Image (cartoon, rainbow, N blue to C red):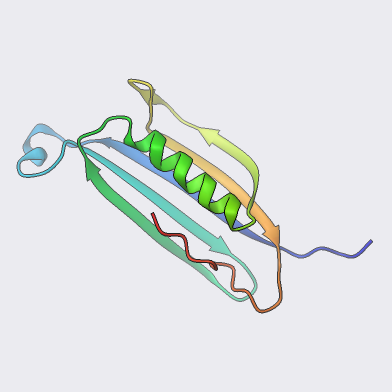
Length: 113
């Protein structure tokens, strides 16, 4: 059996609501998704964020990012869920892995939310 080499990614979703003074001129909720990549050729971070008026938006973004990572051949290793508020994710973290493929950087294909 060949010795498989792996590359890794940590996904973290952080969401919540702005304070009353912070919501002037913006939507009341925020969602941030951070991708931390760990590979032999690249170690880096990509961050996606948005303000929203939909309290369920974190759940939709989490589903979208997991689907996109699966399409890019990432395999889910572990998930840690934090608290929820009104049935919406507040903080969740996942660890993923996939076999190293020669010529492909660890952050390819680029994930776009």
